[in-house]
Image (cartoon, rainbow, N blue to C red; front, side):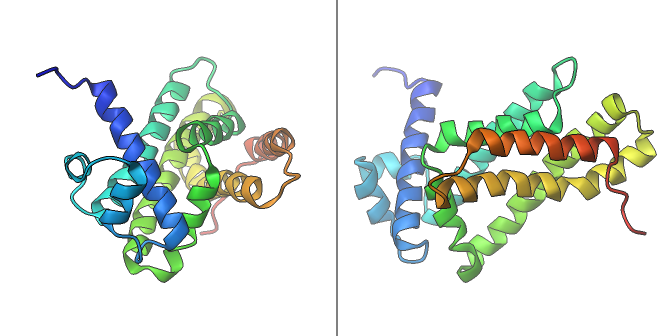
Length: 207
């Protein structure tokens, strides 16, 4: 029997994840069954269940896969010298999301299910914490190495600024889906200007 490569397994998981996102976006998480995902993917039930046991597990692991890829982007960014700017990090993340998911509308439509589905809401809370933590860690290093803040000031400033950068990524996704005339390059240039202003005056948390 031929050996299944890591690349083949990753491609199969991506195929399943993309099919699931299409189903969730079209019918909602609650109304989507594993049978729907199997039919959408064009794979056999055995192929699906060899990777995921339920749609809840599929969603959780799918999101983890997306986040893990973004954390890899972050790790690569942190190895650069000089350290890339927070605005460049935002650019890397949105370009990575676009390359991985393809149609960002799928992501936005799944987000729309979060307020009405308790399981997704709990998952979103966990995801939000991981993403904020990702930005906070990067910003702490950036404010220390580039801005020159002492660590005791850099860390709380980074924690305070992190939600802003999460919002900038989300804003890109939302506007690129909703607005036909959305200027992607202009948006990222605006992010650069905002990040430059924050860089010279990081947010000071209110005691």
